[in-house]
Amino acid sequence: MITNGLDVEDGKTFEADICVVGAGAAGLTLALELAQQGLEVVVVESGGLQWSKRSHQLLDVELSGRSTKSLVEHTRERFFGGTTNHWGGSIRTLSAFEFEPHSWVPNSGWPITRSDLNPYYIRAARLLGLPEVDRPYDAAALGFGDRPRLISDTETVVEAQQWGTVPDEYLRIGQARLEETRKNTLLRCVLNTTITEVHPDESRQRIASLEGRTFGGKTLHFRARDFVLCTGAIENPRLLLASDTVVPGGLGNEYDLVGRYFMDHPSAMMGPLLLTDPAAGLFQEELLADSGLVGWATSAATRTEFQLQGFMAIQWPKMRGVQKPLTHAHGIRDLVHPNAESTPDAPPRYLNVAVNWEQSPNPLSRVTLSKQLDVFGTPKPDLHWAVTAADISSAIRSSELLCLAVARSGHGRLRRLELDDSPTASLTSGGGHQMGTTRMADDPQNGVTDANGRVHSLENLFIGGSSLFPTGGWQNPTFTIIALALRQADYLASRALTTTS
Ligand SMILES: Cc1cc2nc3c(=O)[nH]c(=O)nc-3n(C[C@H](O)[C@H](O)[C@H](O)COP(=O)(O)OP(=O)(O)OC[C@H]3O[C@@H](n4cnc5c(N)ncnc54)[C@H](O)[C@@H]3O)c2cc1C
Image 1 (cartoon, rainbow, N blue to C red):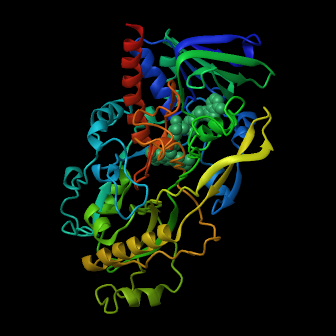
Image 2 (cartoon, protein in one colour; image 1 turned 90 degrees about the vertical axis):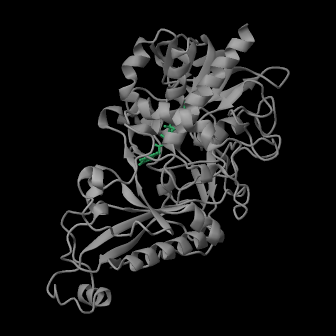
Image 3 (cartoon, rainbow, N blue to C red; image 1 turned 180 degrees about the vertical axis):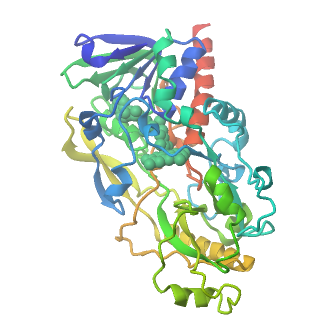
């Protein structure tokens, strides 16, 4: 069922077994799954069914540190379906290695393992219309097995990666699941209603209700046995910190951890990757790129040996179209292939390479509350994105290893990543993958939430989405967000059975 908050009488209270805030990748997946398991669910969504300027303005953020506008400006959406209204649908799972603590990365390690998520990745793949969980790099399957590979398959420093791609009919999760949301009688989605405060009861150990506001000036209330905030990695901590009427300093913030460890995947362009023989024809990697992102990531063994954080490179934008001429083209060609006798007049051919890398979880990279208020009187978030010298040097070293792998293949040359590592220099952008601000940890002194996403100090308040991630890996986050939402649904459904029986 869908209800428009603007049409509801002022002061109304909605009641359900579970109340979910946010109808994006995490919240909508969780809410529909819970309803399918027989629970009554209310999901509260700040926006409507379409983009609107007035709800979008609620995403306004104050910025400092390495933060540039591009980090937050086009990287979140505030309406039904959330940011999946404009995501790319490229899919990778986090490998087992990403869940493990790495001695060279302070504060790394998840309280769950990859095997805890295995069944949920399978279910997530089904929901997204994907034929498999992890798409293998398989040129032969597409008939390109006889073409040369740009980076050799015997290379162990970097590994070839082929991303899964969510088919169009599943891509915009809000649109794809709208009819289901409309028809499910156990689920009520209340649109155009922004949760502005989470109210604990007198014990301060349980949440009693949520308060929501509409642009029409109404105040709505939501009561449930369990509550789950799925509003994204900037808005989740904002809501916890802003809910300070009863508990000074905000909810779940006993150890001053809410909003800390903010991470994104910093991104930049490398290259161009100049191909040694312009007339050699297309490589496997270029041909495969037509059916999804193709690239390389530093292997677990390399990361362990060189003590590196995650790093991946992709062909971006995908090549095979018309190439713009390169500056100093001839000089570059001479450098790549000084004796290119077979193709003396061929213009250099190149691939563009974009890279994303993992940040080390850093308590000084954080979301706090600004002194500025939004239209509902809630403090805006203040984002201080700290990218450390270690993050930068890890990315540069990883890029050098990639360059060496390209050189070893003999098919091309690539220049290492150039980044300004002075602490105040802005990076070009993040990857639209905000993470880490209510991280999971077994010990409440190391994380806001436990292994099920429950806020340690509150019996019935849960968090969903990538703010749970203790580390970000190099992989795009949303497949893991959806797998975690399905796992949380099972947990909440079994908890409901225990509490009612
Ligand atoms: C350009 C771009 C491309 C991307 N491509 C990929 C990709 O290829 N692969 C990948 O894995 N990821 C990709 N992502 C990331 C992906 O979109 C996010 O990881 C994912 O959408 C996050 O899901 P979420 O549910 O946590 O948050 P969202 O999807 O942002 O949903 C949050 C929801 O909460 C609502 N909300 C917020 N505050 C409140 C409140 N106070 N009250 C009520 N409701 C509220 C919002 O309106 C929104 O609907 C991309 C992102 C961008 C920007």
